[in-house]
Image (cartoon, rainbow, N blue to C red; front, side, top):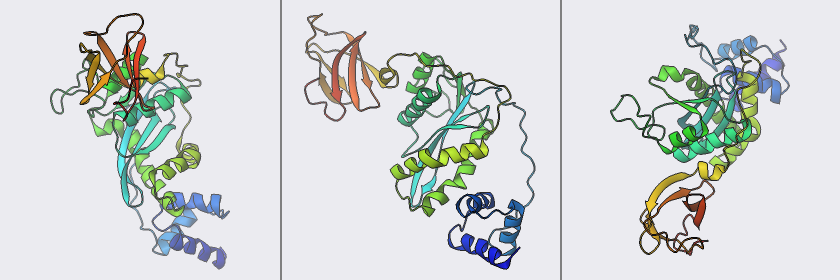
Length: 317
């Protein structure tokens, strides 16, 4: 190997890619610098120069559970807290297919919660279609767990549980970290690549990071780490659930007061008169806080009031 090319590789690692894992750096050499060297040569050169540590040979990870044979049969969703963007901690939300390891959704959020989960599930459904089952941990936004570390209560549904039930998606709880091994390993892979790429490109805020993930990173990761499913075809089907804004909203029920108002999160909301009934007093209405920022009050199939979240003191639309 010409000495000049060796020096170029080592200089690139020292000055631009310090801290990157060898596989990631090897891909950058080929894609960004048109340097086509074998992975083994690059690893040996970096280790010989003392730039990366030699690793003990790892045993092959084995699992008894076979993958689902077809995409869309079972998806994982989880969040991983990490310093993805330099200087700040965020949660990375991923949705991953068990059959082919493909990531359908990736988003950095301030915190993994009900809203970020519903946004991810809706995003995948709108892009891929309805899937058969969703495998999650037993976080409070996924399940009610009456006794710590005990079985979940599948009858008392959370907002996420309600949405999945209405869509006909089976919600499967995980009772051990090992059961979520595939998505945990994917998080480890992303931790070894995404922060380094964001830092290299000078990306220092969540919005810019999410834009980079959607436009560039997620596609490259899927090309590198997805695999062929055992069977041809797909278990995804088109979603015909109707009004997704209502379905994916945060829903609560309220009894209408005698003056046609309701109490919601410490606020008083006024319901305007409707043509088909003299008053809605004592009726039970459904308050839907939609992801688009609207607060919609429904009585049966009727929308009886609409507010912009944060402007609830204004007259209903």
